[in-house]
Amino acid sequence: MNYRALGRTGLRTSEIGFGAWGIGKTSWIGAEDDFSVQALIAARDAGITFFDTALAYGNGHSERLIARTFGNSSELIIATKVPPKNHQWPARSAVPLREVFPKDHVLQCLKTSLTNLQRETVDLYQFHVWSDEWADAPEWFETLREIKTSGMVRFVGISVNDHQPTNVLKALSTGLIDSVQVIYNIFDQSPEDELFPFCRKRNIGIIARVPFDEGSLTGRVGPDTTFPAGDFRAYYFAGRRKREVWNRVQKLIQDLGLSIDELPALALRFCCSHPAVSTVIPGMRTQEHVRHNVNSVLACALPAETLRRLRSHRWIRNFYAPSPSLVDKLRRKVLSQRNRELTTV
Ligand SMILES: NC(=O)c1ccc[n+]([C@@H]2O[C@H](COP(=O)([O-])OP(=O)(O)OC[C@H]3O[C@@H](n4cnc5c(N)ncnc54)[C@H](OP(=O)(O)O)[C@@H]3O)[C@@H](O)[C@H]2O)c1
Image: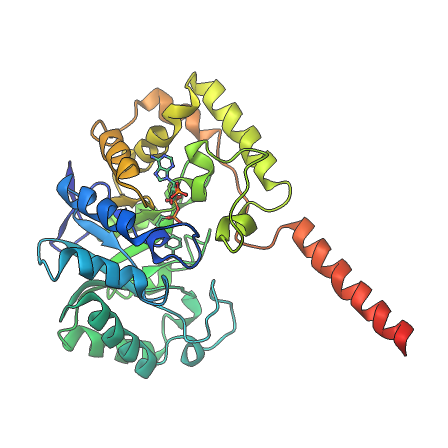
C-alpha cells in the first residue's frame, strides 16, 4: 500500500480508503454484517487506514460496525459526516444555513456519531451536503470554532453536492476547511478543471468518492441487470440508463483494448493517477472486493497515453436526479389519479 498526505493535516492516508455507505444496509440492499466486518478487517490487514462513513448510513449502523470491528484503535483515520437537518440531499440553493446545519444540530449529531464510533474524537468531520451560499454565515464560523475547540474533532471537511465540484470554493477560501470529498471518476472528470488546482495551491486534502460511478465502472451493470427492491441503484440506473452506461462502458474498453474484468482496476487507477487526490474511497462490502481493489492500486498511476485516451470518455450527466422516464411515470400517475377524482366528482 502507498500512503499520501491528507492535505495540510499532517495525517497520512492510504491511497485507497474504505467507502462505508454500502455496509450501512439501508440504501444498498443485501449487505450482511458478518461479510461487512470481514471486509473491514481485510481492508485494515491490507494497509487501508482511511474509513469514510456517515451518521446517515443506516442511521449510524455503518459507524457502529466500524466500532465493533476496530474498537477505538488510534491507528486508523475515521471520517464521518453530519447529515443535513432538513434531510435534503443535495443541498438546494436559497435554503438558509439554519435549516440545514444549525449549531445545536451539528453538535448533537457529532455526539451521536462519537457514541456510535466509541470514540472521544473523530479524525475528520465532514458536512454531508454543501452550498457555498453559506460560506460567509456567522453562525457557520461559530459552529466551526466550537467543534474545533471542543476536542471532539481533529479536522473538518466538506462533502460537496453531487457533480458540483466548484460549489465549495468560497468555503475553502476561508482557510478553515481541511479536506473536500468529491465525485471523481472516468465519467465525471470535472474536478480536474478548477477544484483540484485550487486545492493543490492551498494544500487541501481531496477524497475521491464514487470511483465506480455506483457500479457502472465495474462493468457489472448491463441492460438486463436488476437490483433488489429498495436498492438505491434501482433508482440511479432507472429506465434507459442501464443501456446508456453499458454502451459507454463498451466503447471505453474497446478504445483501451481491455477486457471487462480489467475495468475496476482501471477505474481506481484513474482516480489515484491525479496528484491532487489524497485517497480514493470505493464502496466495498466483501473481502474479495477489498483484495481486488487493493491489488489494483499497487501500480497506481496510469501511463500518460492511457490518461490522454480517457479524457474523451468524460460524460456530463446527473443520475442522482430522477430519470426522465421516472418523472414521466410519476406525472402519468398523478394525472390519472386526478382524472379518476374528476370522474368521481
Ligand atoms: N454525499 C456523499 O458524501 C457521498 C455520496 C456517495 C458516496 N459517498 C462515499 O463514497 C463511497 C464510494 O461510493 P459508493 O460506494 O456509493 O460507490 P462506488 O464506490 O462507485 O461503487 C461501490 C460498489 O462497487 C462494487 N464494487 C466494489 N469493488 C468492486 C470490484 N473490485 N469489482 C466489482 N464490483 C466492485 C460494489 O457493489 P456490490 O457490493 O453490489 O458488489 C460496491 O458496493 C461511499 O461508500 C461513501 O463512503 C459519499
